[in-house]
Image (cartoon, rainbow over all chains, first blue to last red; front, side, top):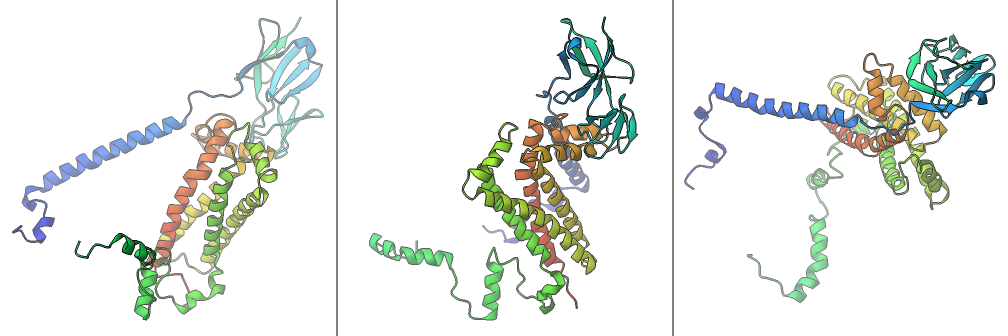
Length: 165
Length: 245
């Protein structure tokens, strides 16, 4: 206890730590800390992106072709319109390309309730905020004869239809 | 161990006095110095400066908008915690529990409306506060940094407002968040990924509801509390409220 009070704050002789050594230690310290923080940040981002989704399936059957009347049949639960043109069937998305509201079937076309976009029966933009035409989805016949829609497969408007008979 | 140990009966007899003295450690302050020390040494009072400029007290200059916003925040925290006792953040029960709060819980309707109207009012008072600070030039040197903190608080207020909007899980909530998060997908390059991150999926569903609930009840209020603390502290550091000289 013969040391002076000041010396208790002096954690070693200043000469022990050279400038080079100080810089090296700082780089190791801050470097490893930054590395851990960086890895954690990437891990956090990855953690927040779910790998399994409990959402409605992207591929689904909608019923037998005969059950659809001529013209547009809205299927709001599935976010699609099934359109029958004689013996040809195609599917148009009912999600507005502007901000994803559900467009409604009106006379000779579709209309969005949110911001007033209007689409023709083949999905082309007639008026309003929508930047793109409505999506067309691939329609196929399932093994049991039902129409099957794949919303993961967007097709060019006017294609992707199924012909019956 | 210097003092003589009490006998048990003596200790019991002195207990009320000891408890009282442990809380009220000083007597009634007699001098100005002692009075200022009371303010300085008290956690709840130390937010106030010991001395206040006369012009700072002029209500017409600040209209008290900052403090009103803060009190609204406290009301929102209090009523929000109480609502959390009944609200269930699941797509199957959220709307039902919200209706239960309104019609089956005693004072639930009052509480929900306090939370709702205080939230609307806070957005308004924060904007008015910002307008007052701008109009009186209180954002100028040396208060630029506090203005920046204030911008962050404004953004947090709006985010809290937005995340809270989904929780009733009614049609209004669903479509508002559908539209709101679709706006996010217009961000160049990362828009769709950002939307996926915010919703925890491609549609406004269970993950989105839970995410918004956690953000609304934990993450955003936490940031809000810390930034409010810094905001108030900066007022003192920058020389008190801005005032006419």
